Length: 188
Image (cartoon, rainbow, N blue to C red; front, side, top):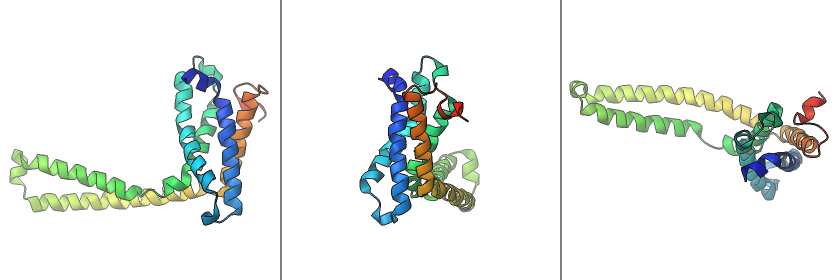
């Protein structure tokens, strides 16, 4: 299976690129609540495939020179564009603070049974935990705001359409044998 996927990756890039182009045009000319549900579902699947495909192609390729780095970059960028709105909806700050909080709780419970933990008042440990969680919250909130801005740009209809068109053209050039593995880079 991986060898057939490696040899057929340009066709997959072409298909998902065409999907990205269609989704970008749909997002450009329709409001968010009027977007095609079918395109959104296909974009979810296609985005996950495009994020996984570079790894599969690189690990499954017998000859590393058959896959140009620009093709891998286009696959990753297309996957991010297709999944941008979905990833933007994930509350990263909540997940990070929750994970750090659970980790600190486990650490405090482990510390309680040690000699050092017996000498420290639990209120001091709790205050330090709250300060650490506050810092983590502030830092992750800033990172999430920057990431959301970046994902909003990647998920914007014209950007998705352009990246989809580039990916479709890259896949077509390689799959049809018009160019070598470099695809568009041979013309730039």
